[in-house]
Length: 428
Image (cartoon, rainbow, N blue to C red):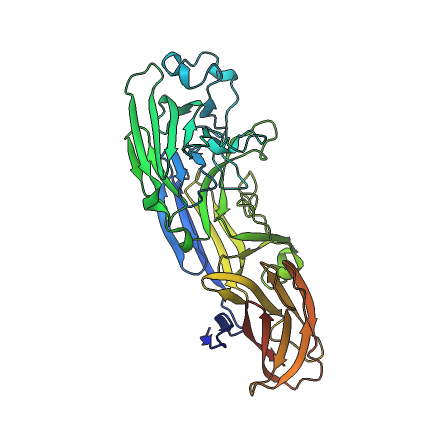
């Protein structure tokens, strides 16, 4: 694919000019035997990092000051994982007298599977704007002070009690010990050093923080285990192996005839959703049989839309867990303001037949101040068609009149108040 930078007037943002043909690439990701690894993946740049899934216990959000959430590592152990509870017999003042009598009847807590919110930070009082789940914000100091004791079974198998003491500015302080109070320690993490990442991790056994994941800007998908509530309705916390997406990435799922998967590209017919489990685990069955009717469309933070099709799966219970798939960047161009994409569009089909017509499929991430429009021009810059478009945020389809145009190459330009982007269209 030939990529050129389009020079626009100063009031316009920079856009990318893309040729219509995109290569289908086959790739695979291995999580190892027994699903031992977690793998971060970029659709444009392949694998970005691999870490053992059991080298951490808790993880602190670093780049969302409005969401001081804390993940818990639910992986490992049996298929139905129960390894994290809020202590039901008392709060912070009862630290010294904590016990686990009756633990088998306590309700376990889990990370959200639709958002990057952890088991500490997910369960809040919606009527209290100062409640962050694990603690309460002090209106005077603006510190979040921990008020809950948790019981965690660590990745080493030990049961520990845990208290998040506070978040003061960018520094988390937390105390942990064996249930009987032995091996007590207080540690702190300054998340200011990790703001390019989504989370910084901590191992309660080794008492060490861990920089495990690549920069948030560098990955789209993460392959590995996570706990789900929908595999077995009566067993929340069932461990599955699947794919979660990065924050800011959205996914549409299409069910088509198996024979159509290779050629199906109509992402504009489907809604893109922001849930991180938009791909999830059910592209394969519980008996490890591939679902051969699913096509995924993944919209990256950059605005590119990629087609993803799983073509093979090897269970980690049999050999090294391996997902095999094809990926293809569909033709798309972005209106950008600085590093932010404010609108994306694609012309489908491309190439297009003179008598068959074409459509522009476009997404507006924000309302545009003036009327958005699309124009078709020849290579000399002469405008041949101009069509008004929607100006409110959303995902739209609009027919593109190309009837009567001689065979050749044309430029389709999307113009908003924030900028413009252009894409080549071949008419046959």
